[in-house]
Image (cartoon, rainbow over all chains, first blue to last red; front, side, top):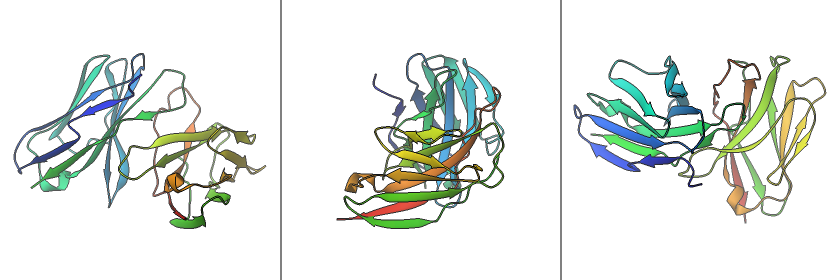
Length: 113
Length: 112
């Protein structure tokens, strides 16, 4: 298996623009997680899905952030409008039901100017 | 989630064993102890986990204190590739608990 796939790997945008990050989980995995990593706050869980349904979005910083999972093989994290403080590395991870290991993607490095 | 405490950084030499400590004095009976590591410019990767007994796998060993208030990740023979941030995480084994809550971790430096 190719592992968790994220795109783009790097994104540079200007403040106010819409940003969409994409994730393809490992085939057969039932859980999908979105994390954000910054120097100040470390790794934070933003939201997670079970069988394509959002279960816990308490980590989503504000209404500018939204996440969807239209099917079992694809998820998006959207920021609209983006702000400089959104600059971070965003990771997607997936896990099989009953499993104990989360498998992380390589991350998307976002820079908002 | 119960809290873990790790040293901010540690240093070791190549081909020597490394013992990474983690304190978790408020651990509950259903909490599993997980270790992940994050190599530079990569996503975190699973290393090992355990509940009560010591555990071994191809990457490392996990030694869990008898009272479960602390644990130690052991890399038996460190290589330069083991330089990473190591995270000790408690995860409730209950059905409803799916989150991993990452702390600041221990940054491990390996000297050649």
